[in-house]
Length: 293
Image (tube, rainbow, N blue to C red; front, side):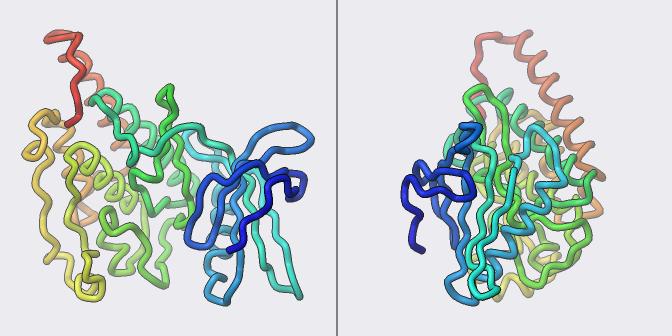
């Protein structure tokens, strides 16, 4: 994919620099020539017929984002399409520029920080569910944390309406829910599993066993009952509070009916655990940094 030139103007947005690349996209730093506001500009290009799905995914990402309004979800201001012979060849998303580092690159260093991040993520996902959508790809790399601790979920590329049955397996192997692998309906409980797997990884350094292993064709055909049960978080990290361990293990239940009923419940429990940990820390050793691992 040929990159845009620095200084090139796309619908009033001047390209300043390249920020990163995806499977069929490049993200740039760009400035609105009128307002001087800085944005992230995502460019998706159709070079072969196989790239059509990336255009469709980006267009749907914009449609979902346009229906959401939450401080912990990255906003997408505008979508621009360019056609050649009636076929869309280029699609641009003008996105909020997020200042921070992904949770995968820089995990929280204390339980208080971790719980604050998890709580913000849960609130954002709960907002999506209230609006009728599921994120469907929650993982540490999709959570960006600013220097002052504010969270932004940055990728809605696999989001879908509640109840969607996707035509193919989509998700990240280490965080994917069983219903995603077996192509059943995607629901808010899918996000609960994904978030649970994310919390598990951040607090233990390990991954939950999922239905999608290295041998995708084999594991994807297995029954849910054959998925290995993960070790309790508290066994891998004894510093984890028992109530947090209990919540995470409920979130990563293979049977969706055994997971928490809603993301609102998850957010409330995370808030409760954070309060308990703070109170216990103040009583025992206020200067203890409480590393997560």
